[in-house]
Image (cartoon, rainbow, N blue to C red; front, side):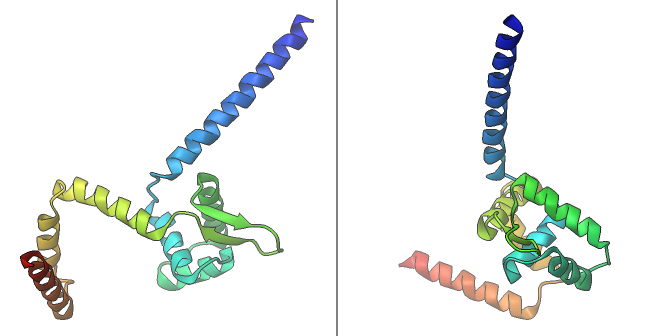
Length: 156
């Protein structure tokens, strides 16, 4: 009799544990930081919309050094487990879509980058960008116009 009762208590504890882990996973989704390769997958899905693993794999391989299909498949399966992607299994070809929102994810990552690399200083970041050799004359002109527009708005 006590064995049965102990088994029921164990089941209740196990179910409670699973519920707690699910809640923690949901909380983690709000502050997840994708790795570089996860970010590459997210960029494709944000840009092209819901896609198959084959499409994402082919797109990524056209942009960078080739990787095996199974590596892309496993990465997207792990991202699904982490709550970054959703998988539609209603057809033979599984369709993946991004759960993480582009603006929110990029904003969060930019904030962490700014805090880590520039001690939270936006002006230091902008100065580093302006001093970067990758910044084109056209981009500099756009930044000047933006700064002038912001300055004019502050005067009003």
